[in-house]
Image 1 (cartoon, rainbow, N blue to C red):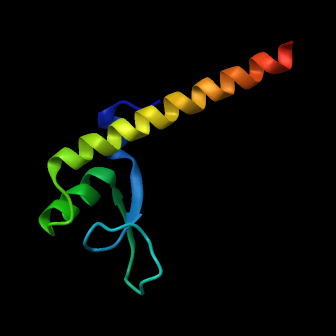
Image 2 (cartoon, rainbow, N blue to C red; image 1 turned 180 degrees about the horizontal axis):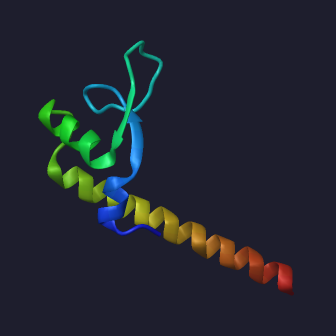
Length: 78
């Protein structure tokens, strides 16, 4: 699992306002997750607190995935 600094440096695809790819016909580019969030903040689409919430959701999701993976491996061994 990534720590917050590594998670923010991860490369993602977004448009010029920091939005993730969608069906809109807007040019996309690859940038760091931190730059994507900075663009969202500059365009009023997000606040600093939202970044912490998204990182916490990432940690929670990965923790649940690891638990499920361990449980399934435990079931196979029985």
